[in-house]
Length: 251
Image 1 (cartoon, rainbow, N blue to C red):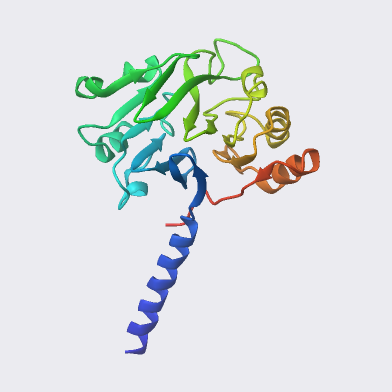
Image 2 (spheres, one colour):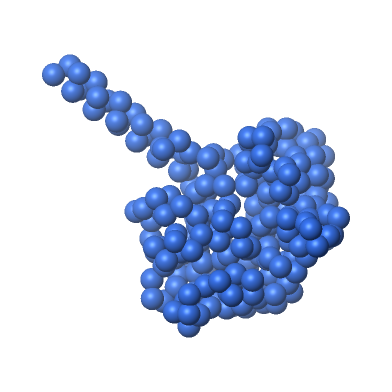
């Protein structure tokens, strides 16, 4: 009996811990409350006024119990951003996919009825949400780079008067550094694929978002030091709020 009770307590504790890992944030917009839910690595969910947006959904189990997406944003072709099995499992018949051409070329024909292809600089508005495709690439620009210029997209979303930037896989490129009026930014930092903490902090200090979330911070040698990132940004500009969340929850 005691062992059964102990087992139940352990299960409840683990569930509570997992729930705490799934903390959401709420931002007030003209469309209503915007709920931000970190999922894992590059994946996140945004919800506003009944519109559910998935960014780079990867790992179908990460989305169990979540509302189906109205919009899916895909930044690039690598598996941590473009996971076709997850996309097929979470979407419904009306889900709108927004992606660069390199991703569109790999989608099943059935998905192309609800597909919006954007190249860098293109813009679309879907369900009241504006989406602008922003370059994302490695420096220096080389055909051998992991992320070549023009292949993938970062995105700037306009939601109820708020501007949200999702970096995708990139370094602190001029197009990032020159962004204006960003309210919320999700910025990657993982060597050798994107950039290190210092470069990410320097880029953030250049475009000055009101709130920044370090995300996509697991690299070849483990997790990047997001606390160091927070210290660098806050030392450079106390008006930028750095929000540290757990993008790698235990399961």
